Length: 220
Ligand SMILES: Nc1ncnc2c1ncn2[C@@H]1O[C@H](COP(=O)(O)OP(=O)(O)OP(=O)(O)O)[C@@H](O)[C@H]1O
Ligand SMILES: O=P(O)(O)OC[C@H]1O[C@H](OP(=O)(O)OP(=O)(O)O)[C@H](O)[C@@H]1O
Image (cartoon, rainbow, N blue to C red; front, side, top):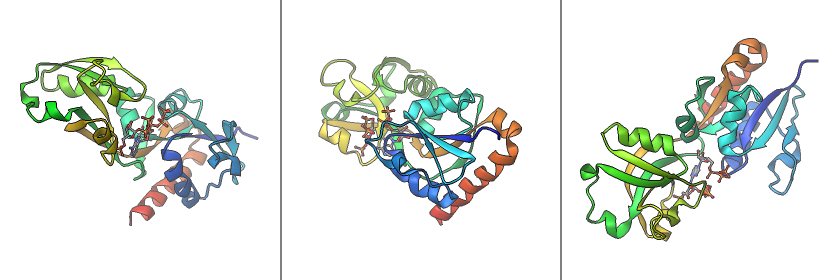
């Protein structure tokens, strides 16, 4: 028997939105998969030819790019940050809606003009997106890499501005920050390892079609 196809799913907030989508594709994971207390990392499904792994959001792209998993579900923020050439992202799944934005303390934003910036210091989990965004208009971005809680950086003097994900805007507001520029809108994508798309086409192509139909059905 050939090895099962492995689908990598992020264990954070996308997981909840991914479960109904998987059901529409006809993939029902074993019960432990949705249980945040479970320590298991690899899970069987109702389909013997498909297993799921639950990994950190940024690691979904790494597992799939290296062919350790054939498919994955990942935010377009992660794809833009890594820009892996081994990945093909054929389906916008319409889940995980948010945006990636520049923010700064609300009192500073009230009198700031982003058009006047020539050099910015930014705390972020996304240094490549940040540098590309600012380089495109000739602004030099010096990034301090953090893995979370970016919102603390301005008040504590680590960096006056941040680049982070924003959805309701509540996290910014509760930390005295204001959004000053939207860099990009974000949704989650189905990603496929390019080599697997060719070598395991008989299994991968119907799955990609299944996800496309499930995403279109949810949007209709
Ligand atoms: N506020 C949000 N609203 C909607 N989608 C979001 C939001 N925050 C993050 N996402 C999406 O979910 C993905 C995972 O988010 P995030 O990195 O915050 O999760 P996490 O569980 O903290 O991940 P990790 O622990 O691996 O860093 C992001 O890459 C993004 O695509
Ligand atoms: O605009 P809001 O609706 O407040 O959402 C934005 C927050 O959501 C994400 O964090 P998450 O909750 O995933 O936690 P994390 O920073 O620990 O990853 C993001 O990093 C922001 O902090």
